[in-house]
Amino acid sequence: MALRKILTEGDEQLLKHSRKVEKFDNRLHTLIDDMRETLENSGGVGLAAPQVGILRRVVVLLDVNKEPEEMVELVNPEVIEQKGSERVVEGCLSVPGVYGYVTRPTWAKIRAQDRFGNWFEREGEGIVAQCFCHETEHLDGHLFTEKVEEYIDPEAMQGGDEE
Ligand code: ZN
Image (cartoon, rainbow, N blue to C red; front, side, top):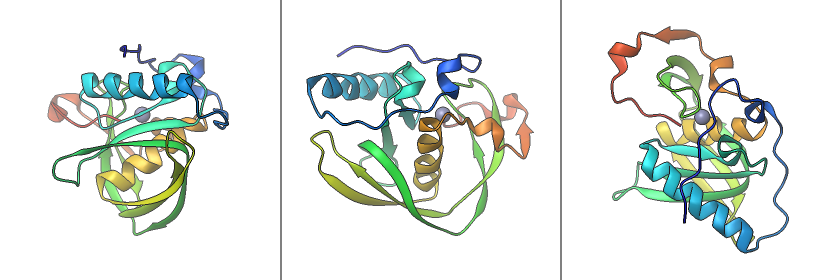
């Protein structure tokens, strides 16, 4: 496994549409393993492949609502259902040090494939629902800063979660 470099705002790869994964091969598995390691090393809660410069629909995220926290691998993910709405603080590994308020669902259901191509569904509440939305938006070239309603003074946000 290897750490991958996380691209930051201004890199045009972050604004591009990622392609569907069609081959569930060793190359995909290496990418997912590297993304897991990179996310663990970053201290963030979610990472999408375009953030490491790979324009494929792959996401890894931490389900922090599980005890212990569970790393979830999502290939070709789609948010298929969402409920509720709340104003939450958000950050992004690709926009370091920047936090702002965005409106997100309180609950969401995602449909995705695992690294072998098997389809599954998963539900998440709170920060996990937020993360489902944030990460799938990366796959379409969108950054959370497009949704920020109000920015927060970074000094007030030491140690916040980044996605
Ligand atoms: Zn992000």
